[in-house]
Image (cartoon, rainbow, N blue to C red):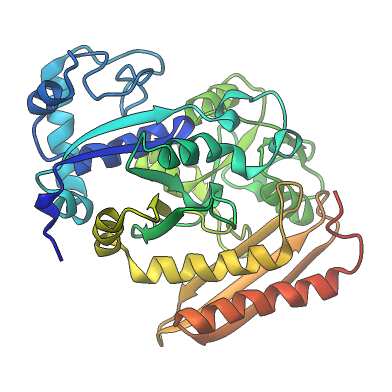
Length: 371
């Protein structure tokens, strides 16, 4: 197989609302210092140094929203910092000159309506998939929980990076946990999965739906008193270096995570054998197997953004797969759970996910998944 260094240029794209951590990933893929990248891309700092109209050098870790970094040396230090933080990715693409294109998807643009009302999860990937298929980019970086259970024709997803912590974080200015929130407190979340599990365990709480926006926006609304608490994926907070905002971390018993939460996937064109080989060499096998199991569960349930579904596959101390899954009514009145255990191997885990999904379909009965 050709060495990674033989890949001389790379264009990657990610969705706008996750641009902070995915932009960091691109920096980790770019081995030349910023000044070299700037010359190759033909742009001048600060606004277009990284390639891609609309990036404007903003939304990187540590920046204030909407304010570009104007100190070139500061940005150069950030490049080296990101290189050192993830050698797993960086070494794979050593010597590769790359451009990062941040694409603002429909799901990022429309924040006034619930996702289910504007088309569901595919809205966070559609424009990126189109750019990939059109040859505008070479690879597409996705948060796996945003990726529909089907992939567009002529694309493959041969790589999952090592998974981050899958748990949800509880954030509040006045309580240490969901259990300590006073009756009638408002919890903000755009996730039906979180809403249903909150109301199932704490029916005295209220949930503000469609609590959307990036992390900074949600934290601002919390500080303004719009809500008394919110829940966010711990993985995203870690990648953004914003864990100082976490009040407590919810256990799996309190809040089962979304399918594929904490996992990053990288897609390419089916016809691009060279890129597929490069990405396959970066793949983290344990993560991709767990995600495959969870997505098989989701696909069997034919879940949409209107259906509260949670699922998590992990390896136990004996090396076996433990899978837990649930479906719920949006009001939390009914929660149906199941679990499976078996070998940590692809075919076995796919069967576990599908079998668990079939069981919950039967238990839920007709009409449970109707929109």
